[in-house]
Length: 387
Image (cartoon, rainbow, N blue to C red; front, side, top):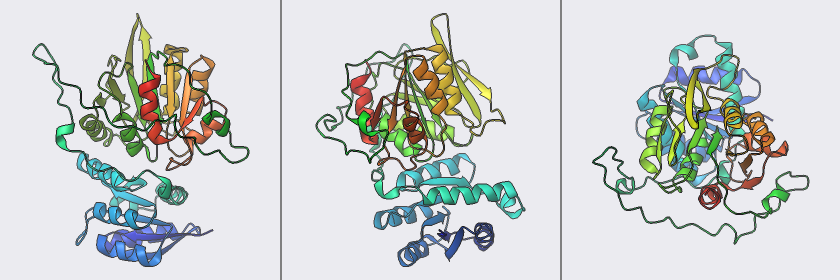
């Protein structure tokens, strides 16, 4: 089946070149092109394409405003193009929060070349985004009031702050999740009886497409006193992870920052793997530290969930909780297998709430998942299930 695409960009060169690349695949048809966000909204309504590619900086209406309006009206997957800068990262994260499914770097020089690898990536990403599930995602998040973000103070002068009022949460035991289709490996696990809270030495969370918003939903539920350290692996470029860590830190009650070599794991701290590198955890002399290594060119993902989870399995056998969220591919499956073999527990996001049901499906189908949870249930489940 041919995937129809609407291209929204104020650069005539970019519209033309992108159209040439996409149509060369034989699987994609560019059905329209818009020069600004307002035009993009109007053409999206008229053409109802399978995928929309969206620039950010455009006249009349910017890309984020256009994404927000398109997603509000129709569940059309949007792929953002962004610059690989700190500001580009901030804008892209805003676009993902507004409802965009995924993003790609916008590099005019690379686009202009006859780069077969780049063309392959563009085509594959469009086809993957076309298979996403924007209509079943949780609604886009609104920005919280600045006062809700705690100000952290360290050192001798630090004074205790009152804990923010607990967030309202639904009783996740009161509702019965829908049964999966016949043969669905998740179905029997959804109804598994949950035991008492467990003590975990560390919680590892891995994700890819749809992950920035998913991580935000999970981590903002956790109290500042969350009793376990957390390591986060999100497939993301090196220029994006600092901005993403800062964003999470402002929104969460726990502390979140990009991991650095030698960081010590501690309760209430979430460390995000830096883009373009690999993050491992080593436990020596009763203390767990982060090791940041150069990205191995033989690995598709930098950072890679399998690498981090494998190190957790070795350092904390039987004492780790692994959580796999939305994402393309199967990264995390082998790391989860190592965790399970050491006696640790695995949770995964369900299909209905996943933007791309790839990574969590791979783990569930391999029989590695102890609990399959909706995205909005994962944060509350961590609060009640980790002592």
